[in-house]
Image (cartoon, rainbow, N blue to C red; front, side):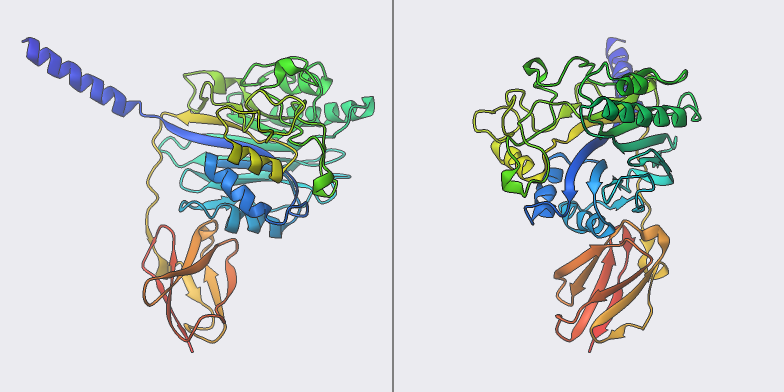
Length: 411
C-alpha cells in the first residue's frame, strides 16, 4: 500500500509540473543613441553582440533614425539567432519636434503576433503603442508602449514630461482594466517627485504602473542608487563626435514600467521577480565609464566595452512569464508562399513576391553543394535580390519554418 501511495504521489507531482510549466518572455529597452549616424561605424555589429548576450524576445528602442536602420538591425544585429525576428512597421514621428529620432519594437515571431499599432501624439515625440497576441492556447494579450520623453532639468522640461505622461495615462484609461501593459522608454526623470513620474505611476483610476525594482528615490547624482543608473556610460563624449552625453553613470533615465496586475502571481502574464536590471551595471561605476576596469562584477569587461561603444545609455531588461505553453509554429510549404516574378531563369537580379505572413522570417540562398551563401530578413512582400556575384549555376531559396525550397537558375 505504501508503494502504491508513493507511485500515485509521484504521478501527481509529474502532472503538476506539466500542468504548470512556465514560458518566459525576455524584454529589453535600449536608447540606441542616434542610430545609426553616431560613431563608431560598426555599431550594428556591436549591437549584435549585446543582443546575443541577452537574447530578448521583445526589443524596444528609441533614437532609431531611418527605416534603413531598422533593416540594419533586422539583418545584421539579429543575425546571431536562427529564430524569426520581425519588427513593427517603421513609422515616422508625427509629433511636433521629434526630428529624426523614432521608437520601434522588434519581436520573436515564434512567441507572439503583432495585432495593432498606434501613436500617441505629444509636443515632442510620439509614444508608440503595440498590441501583441501571444502564440499560446490562451492567446494572452500584451500592450507594449515605447517612449522618449523630453530631456533637460529646467522647469519647462519637467512640465513637458508631465504633459507626455498625461497623454499616456489618458490613453491607457480607455484600455480594459485588466490589460497587460509594459511601458519602456528613456524618460529623462531626475527625481521620483517629478509630476510626470507620479502621473505614470498613479495617474489612472484603473491601472497603476509600477517600477518592478521598487527602487524609488532621489537617483540623480546619488551613489546610493548606483545599481539602477543607466546614463551616461561615458565620462566624456569627445571620442564619439559629441554624440550623446558624458559625465559618467549618475542618472536613472531608462525604465520599463509594468501595470500592477503583472505583479500578481495569479495573472496570466506576470513579472518574474529579480529579473529587472540596468544591463551591464555592476553597481560600482558611479560617475565613471561603464567599462572602467575596476567596475568588476557579474557583467564582464567584454560586455561593458561593447556597451561603452554602443550608446551613452545602458539597456534595461526584465522577464515576464506565462503558464501557457507557446505553440509550435506550423511548417508551411514554401511553394505556396513565394513566387518568382520573372521566372526562375535569371541573370543578375531575382525578383521575389512573398506572402505577407512571411514578413519577419529569414530567407537564405544555398548553392548546389548546400552551402549557405547569405540571406536576408523578409521586410516586404516584394524583394529584389542581387546575385550578380554568384557564378552561373543552380541555387535554392529556403525560408525559416517553411518546408521545401525554390530553385533559381543563374545563367
